[in-house]
Length: 139
Image (cartoon, rainbow, N blue to C red; front, side, top):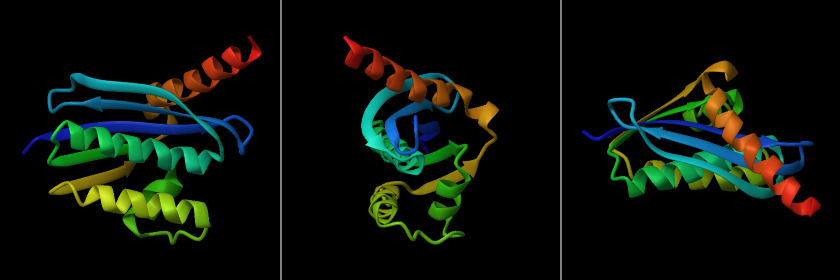
């Protein structure tokens, strides 16, 4: 079964504020298959986290993954996707529903909370996207 390990993070400077996502996708041997650093507009940190997960799942589908192991430092997103926490915010409900639909494309999935330091590269990619965008806006 083709399994991908995915680290994802969303960041917002200001919460709400300019937001970015960072994603790293690894194969079974730990080789990097894909990386993304992308500015996504204006929003909250939680919205950015969900956008990162959605983009990660879309990329995993394109890479023909059968199983995904997802790692995030957002306890809220992890627990909402697992069904431990309910989703009350209307914007997050729509994003959560999109994630649930995308997850049906896989035979199996795991989503795990990891401490921020174990998700540092995805965090760095998310923040780089915001900084790059803000610098471009200054020009």
